[in-house]
Amino acid sequence: MTTTDLPPASLRLHIDADALAANWQALNRLSGSARAGAAVKAEAYGVGVAQALPALLSAGARDFFVAHWSEVPAVLRHASPLQLSVLHGVNNAAEAAYARAIGARPVINSLHQAQVWAQAGGGACDLMVDTGINRLGVAPGDLAEPVIAALDVDLLMSHLASADEDGPLNARQLARFREAASQVPHQALSLANSAGIALGRDYALDLTRPGLSLYGGIARPELADVIAQVVFPQAAVIQRRQLAAGDSVGYNATFTARNELEVATVSIGYADGFLRCRGPGGALQHKGIALPILGRVSMDMTVVDCSAAPDLSEGDFVGIPFDLPVVAKISGLSQYELLTTLGKRFLRGS
Ligand SMILES: *Cc1c(COP(=O)(O)O)cnc(C)c1O
Image (cartoon, rainbow, N blue to C red; front, side, top):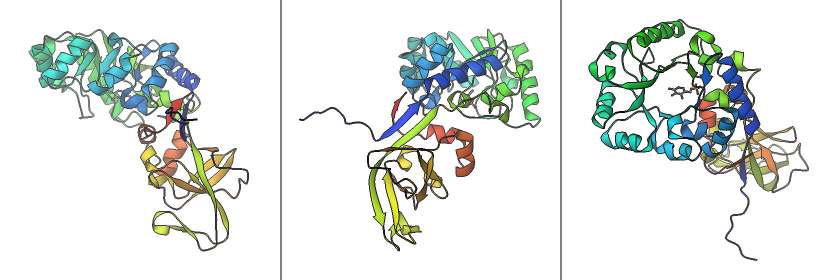
């Protein structure tokens, strides 16, 4: 038999769509009288827009955020352009023309962007005011400029720099944002990301913009009991082999077997977002049994000690630990990095 159909993938990303929907609903509830939107930039934080959008829409989400114009078409396969804001705004005539043609709202971030938008003919937009992150957004002192005053602002927003901490900056940003809101006509106000939602109702205003916690990230400890894991990576064993005492494993021979050892080579590596820092002290999983990682993680493969799993066979799938706060702590990577570096070779599905 010959076929050009692709054989089954040796890397799977199981997405728990029910958990994703429940996470949105929990964040929407915690937002009080505000409604929760959803940040779906960077392929819905690595989950995949095609997987995440249907679940978010069925949960009730109606307001979506991406960063780049290149991310717009994937979202529009599921949602209306009226539901979509593009965080990086319009930096040139080509972006403004595309925004107008498609009907998605640019988030205006500077006087220059406001000019670009006005010159293209303008229309409904969002406006980002920078209240202290000093990254992207119009400075509060520039809000009275005529080109800003002339905008048709739907969502007036700002972004918290350290909502995951308890310093004085959060309250200062909220106060500056309220001040800005009194100066710029707008339809609705939005300040809180995932962590900001956990800061309390004062921060929720009209619309919240969770990202990380939709996908299982614990942005603040208050969310630990509310948010469930969404992403479960699995990789196939592509070889099982026996090492003799003195054999080493992997690039640069950083592990040497002291005794005979049963090992398995697993089809995941740093090209899949399983970075080298996940190697030392880390383990993969098989039916609740830990399979310690041996030697360096390479681009497409990771070798594990499988002496505790005599039944593990070539073709079996092993679990890649992905409890985000736990793995972040062990690896030194942020929960955001763990999600957004998930590679393209995973077959994403529920
Ligand atoms: C990415 C992003 C969010 C979502 O933040 P999380 O910390 O992932 O919840 C919200 N607002 C803006 C402007 C963003 O860039």
